[in-house]
Length: 266
Image (tube, rainbow, N blue to C red):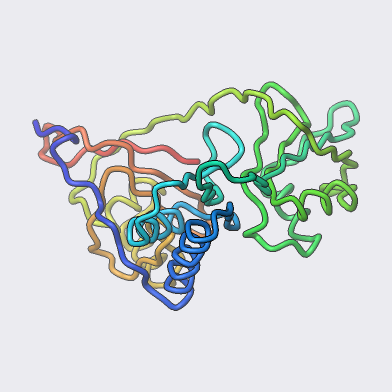
């Protein structure tokens, strides 16, 4: 039985559109400015895909004084920090604590509720990082944001849905419990996108193909248009209106010679 460690992971995909090419050029410009002027430079928050593009841009710029920072240990959205040696650091990343005033029996807001309320402040998505809902702190959320956005949240955000919230910028970020992911397994007839999506979504391959044709599917934040696109360990699949999934392993073959996949839903 083949092991997933023998399988190739997805390689780097160059910029696919004008927005991605602009981001790559901007990252290289930041690197040049930071290194030639000896000053620290920072980006907005970046998705996984954007982080891949920026990582390649740092290699092209021959920059070795950079790192990503999302504010906590398991951050998904992160900012690029280019910090040459012995420079003054002014990292714009700030954490805001949101405390809900819950009445007895009330259901705390979900991640989407917090995001919706934050976007209602006319904030740009790139000014916001992760929204963390600690499982051991009912009605509490931590929002990572750029400094200007954080101050706006603290001053202006008073409600999430119909629940009153109090927002406070915190100096020290707590250690959050690591999220427990329920790893699921399934068997598929082939390692192509429509088959894997159908297993993850528990729908037919025809329905999965319809989602792809409708432009509702992304692989690693890149739109997918082909039903027979290959999948790789580590790929993240976003299906608009259905959720986000990650392929974690390909353990081998079943007794019926079908491919076994392991995955979880975010």
